[in-house]
Amino acid sequence: MPRVNLRISGPTPLPPEVRAALSTDMVSHRSEAFRAIVREVLPGLGAVFGDPATVLPFTCSGTGGLEAAVVNTLRPGQRVVVVSIGYFGGRLADIARTAGLDVVLVEVPWGRAADPQDLAAALRRTPDVAAVLMTHNETSTGVLNPLPELCAVVREHSDALVVADVVSSVGATPVLMREWGVDVAVGVSQKALMSPPGLALLGVSARALAVAAANPVRRGYFDFTAMAAAVEEGTTTYTPAIPVFYALRVALRMIEDEGWDRVLARHRRLAERCRDGIVDLGLEPAAERAYASPTVTSLSLPGELRASEVRERLAEEHHVLVASGRAKWKESVLRVGHLGHVGDEDVEGVLAALGAVLRDGGARHGG
Ligand code: PLP
View 1 (cartoon, rainbow, N blue to C red):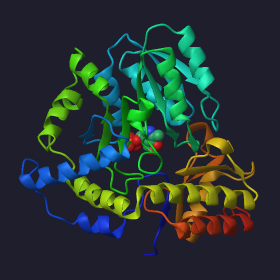
View 2: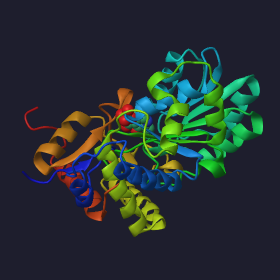
View 3: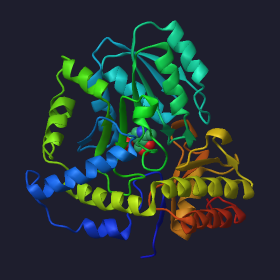
View 4: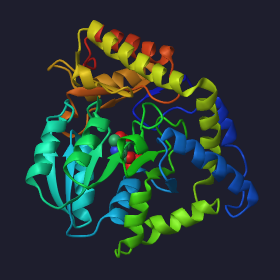
């Protein structure tokens, strides 16, 4: 089988070292061997998340992690502001509504970043905001929100908690929880952290832990207080995705070996190369340049081309797998993931394949 150049926004390809770690046999999650892994992996993640009070690993996908963030820190009937710049911002709003919250939506046209002044205006006209929920990197549009500025606005106008979805940013771009004032940052194992799906990783501030401890809402599986106590003991509340811990241990060592600054610089460089290459092919980037994501590049296709057809041709003829747009961008936009275990050759491979398909008309033959 030819190697597939997996350039979706996640799950991302695994480095050979991580794949090797995944062949390790199971240990008891109550053993010293597992405690040693937890005591290496969670502090390592703490550095990547910008020094939160703790990192809580829940065995679930990112959406589960977002739900955990909401049900621990908020109670039904409380008011939250959700800043939505795309599909995953919409999901945050849905999770908040499902939890019985009063959602005030600050909606931004797709392809653009949130303007901190719009958030400031919303906070000025909305009393009693318990939390502001926002997406750091909007994977559906390829836009990186100015999270530090947005957090500063929250601090200036309210004492609301900040809950940030860092699913497709953490590990590839700075997330400075303590410095920026983020209370819960929800990441995952399967994107920039070069590991398989299986763990939602939540950076949690001391303030959010205290709010969760005092929250009368029953949480069951997702309880922060119980998980924080387990993590203190070097384990997890229930049986965790042990292989993902094996993977993360190796992946974090690889990040440290490469050097954090180099990891960040590599993501920035590849994002710029991808965007420039797309422009050179005569295509239109779908995200505003100043806030272009370092992990996902989105492009608008000419009206006569359908994303599903171009995507299929890239896969079948060139073994390059990119993502199509989400929801209203489904057939008009393609998205290229360049996060985690990714190098120049991967991005060049996408651009070469895309160029070949476009030169050949883009659409499927006979279709
Ligand atoms: N938030 C963002 C920004 C995402 O990119 C994704 C998935 O791609 C999610 C949330 C949902 O994560 P999951 O599919 O792991 O539940």
